[in-house]
Length: 89
Image (tube, rainbow, N blue to C red):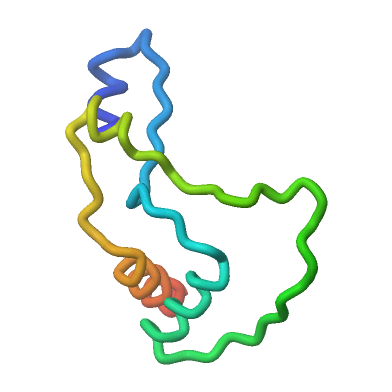
């Protein structure tokens, strides 16, 4: 959809955030990955680094408005698909 939009609007430069619009912490993603893929990851929780943003997530309202796009997959779906793809390499 974004490529078609760019081809139809060659003089327009747009940036689209693609995501669910819901933020997840790194730990939530780790736990979700482990549960979804039936794996245990080896990780350590360290101190926050200076300058780390407290919250980061993709605001997808612009792509929804401009391209009428909305996510089809959940975080769990994306983690499952990406792990399955990684296994094929």
